Length: 253
Length: 253
DNA sequence: CGAATTGTTGAGCATACTCAAGGAGCGTGG
DNA sequence: CCACGCTCCTTGAGTATGCTCAACAATTCG
Image (tube, rainbow over all chains, first blue to last red; front, side, top):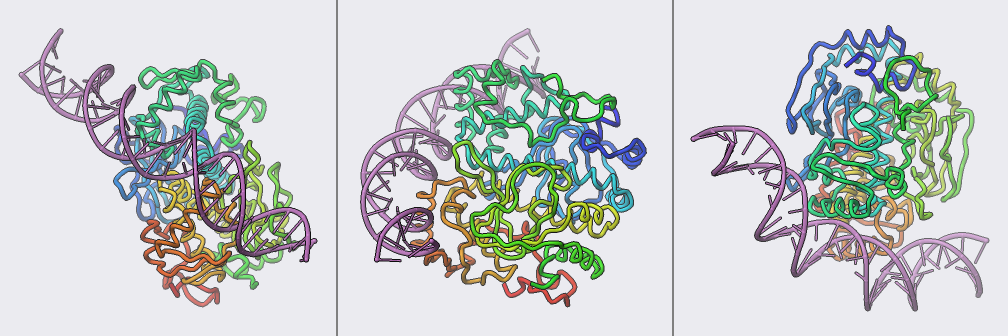
């Protein structure tokens, strides 16, 4: 993975120069890999290091009283796990690997220092967290207001587009980076019912499922059915940013 | 309202000195009032001014295809309406007054400048937005994972505590700053069903409703029923911050 | 005081959940 | 290579939760 991919989300907002990126790059002191299901970060006090996902898919999750989990966000390569804990002083949820993952670590103190002395870096980190918040708000609307077939459709549209933006999906298909159980936990649905909803979407010709591979035979119909308006994802679009940084855009859509 | 109350949320995190607060205070160029139901900020492009609620209660809301709204956050005195739009460049939802409100405005360019040259102010603004995000995540879990009687109970616990933190509630009661219709929109429930849930909570002795006045005859039982863990609100607690700024704490709880 | 909005209740129905059981896929060890 | 055990997926049946439509009562506001 190249540096600009590593700091994809920070570069997306513009405003960082190559020196800034080099500073971030230089602060990396460790790389780890973990198996699907393992914890990447546990809830708790102030973080000793800032962690960035570089490969695989992870999630933010909170334990529930009945032993299950609520999944409140999906993290893709280029997403930070615990930046907010650096500012707030504590993690109020954990991060777990959904697929096998690779992450890099930067010392919390170094990042904290960079944020204080380099307003461009501070701004870029801030912006990346606000992008996360926009997704969170879209999830709240999705889960709170739509009937469950549209919830499922909406989540799949979002997942496909975000995976596509990091090169892990095409307009026609994606490999689902989680089990149906976890899809259900994201949406607050029972896993058996989610399974039925997937079947119904297939029968409606909006989807095709083969194991973990999902196909989108009629993406625009699915997106319309879901009411999917991708603006909230704040992904770079064709012509929006100055070209030439070599990062794969979603322009092919 | 005193200055330290105005910038309550920024002061709560610590890290601001009186000079910083004076800078913010000095940037206020206008004050407005609006009636319940009016829009405070519309969705759209980059904000010309940053808006801070000083009196009353407002909400973030998004229109839905069927003409209804999804309410994604509650704003109390001391909360900013559109800080995130300053960084992200656009508002992807609107702000509406739930009760009669008063707000103050600061030029976006001034705040933007202050954030770039004053790391303490930048950090305090950042922290206040992260506190909002933590609440948003708690809402996601609440709406996604709890049965609706517990959803309602949880939202009322949160509302009461937050209102109490700005002096608008006591441990025993609060005046509900919205109609049942809007309570329902926050939770994604039908308003008629919400009404029944409120009745059931009353019959269970967990609540008493008289018009818009809500009484909490057994607050600890209600909080236990709701699974309410107020840590996520990041409100100041007794002994946590150095005393002496004269702002009312929630210590009485 | 009257009109409009908001709150309250009933009846019937649709949605989504639980419990239970069987089948498919996958990694491990013989 | 196959058999085994495990997890995950799939389906059925029955139930509970939450929604819609409709009517009426209570507030609020002009």
